[in-house]
Length: 210
Image (cartoon, rainbow, N blue to C red; front, top):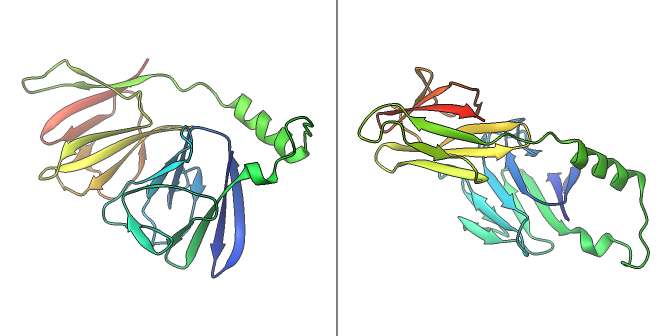
């Protein structure tokens, strides 16, 4: 498991423990780890806990990912690494150092609550985007990955992330021509709903869940 502790001006303000999957970090309250600061992007970074060590990835090119004072696009986290965001700092810890020996399992109230939360999370239906125009009309784009990136550098790039609350779309590279339901996506992070229409690189695509 992984523990992330958020500090503000070197004072701890909260901490969260995650067992597996992908931890989304950002300003938007739909993230798994939310930091209320304009120095952080609505969708700032994602930590993949499936691997050992965990991998953290930058999600927004306009907001740098700074770890231990050095800028990265992707980084393998080690115990004690610090992610700096403005006046905030997020410190990663491997919870193995806090755990009891494997021969003696102790179920604390906190771990019991965490297990109940993990077990009660609803299954997220599979989702796709269907191309609604152009030479590839009818083609399906699967959204099975934790992050699906669409677009190109000159026409804007979006990322669709699978989170515990659903599928969320945000921009990695801004372009006023990227729209959702006829409105510019801009710097928003939006929860996608059935039949929402995205326009990416002048190609309309419709979102739907199975």
